[in-house]
Image (tube, rainbow, N blue to C red; front, side, top):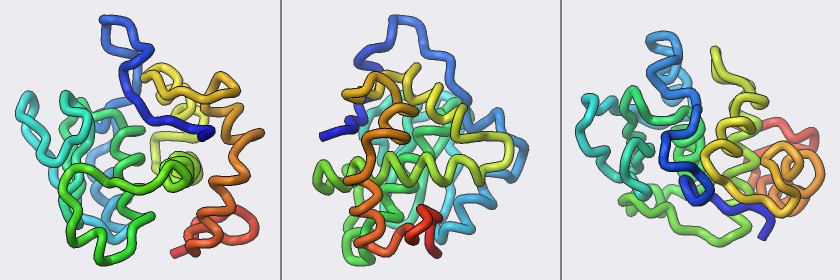
Length: 173
């Protein structure tokens, strides 16, 4: 597999420097998530995040709802949103914390989140790559950007097969 999402494995004891959801302008994430067809639920600071697979400040998923706190990394919210986008309706209805899926779907999720990062006001693909690297995602080419640019054909093919991107690598829908 060319992409593995495993936050904190390479991180130092100090929290990595990543952009939190609370740094985006008010309403930005709400509008973005709604435009994708999903609900966003903000959780109070310090409270456990429902549906969070990784715990701590990581985004959570349950059915059609994405759960975040102000300290949830934007890349985490995007990643979980993209898991939801990559699911069929029956999987979405059963969704409770663990998005499941095969390794190739995980690669597709990572690729799709990079495409969508460019469309989040106040965020960017370059910032997403920096955040993913800081958080401890592992790629055989050494960085999220190198994987995206040089080693993600399998992810693109999977996304095209499932109608999630077009022939020019633009998100569909």
